[in-house]
Structure formats: structure tokens, C-alpha cells
Image (cartoon, rainbow, N blue to C red; front, side, top):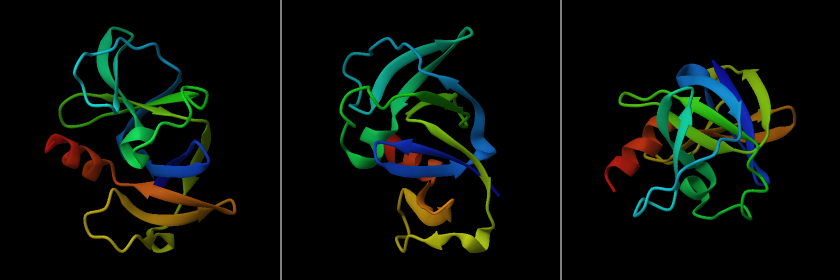
Length: 137
């Protein structure tokens, strides 16, 4: 399996590249009133409008000191619409074996497990679980 590895503040995260459409730079967004705090706003990427989600707020319930950390946007496809994820520096794409993944121990967790990549512990995000939980809100 291939994972894309990136930083959010001081922490390193990754998820499967299966849902990744592209990686781009920072995008300017238009705020949507009364939206959840993890929704930054709407972005227009080559005529396609999508929601920009702050992964740091979504995962850690905190903002990594403003936008200083925001370097890249990862566009993922979901069943309904593409979503833009606000992330820090993208470290790269790594090939990992399923056996290398250490389970998080929580059945319904957003973090499905951990893996060591280049001497760094990477928290593997379960994108399906994140958006399943947020749909229920």
C-alpha cells in the first residue's frame, strides 16, 4: 500500500493514496457562515468548487498557530464530492506493507494505526472514519 506522509504542526500523519486526486499549494478560500470550525471555507480549483477542511482542527481539536504551518492542499475524492485538506509540508509518498502497520487498538478510531517511516512515527488516518463521524454531526 502507498501512503502520503505530511506534517500538521509537530506531528506526522499519513493516509492511503487510494483517494488522493492531487497535491497542490495553498488555496484561497471563501468563508461559509455557520459552518463547523474545521471547515475553512470553499475553494475553487480549476472551476471545481469544494470544501477546504482544516485537518489539524479535525484531528487535534486545535489550530496549529494560525496559518503559518499551512503549506499544501491534498485533494481527495469521496463518494459525494472532492474535498480539499489543509496540511503542512508533504514529506512524500511511501510504500508500506500492511504487516508494518501497528493497530491503534481502538475499533472506531480516526487513527487506524501507526507506522515508522524514515525513523519517524506516522499516525495513519482512516479517511472513511473521519468523514463518517462528521456526517453524523
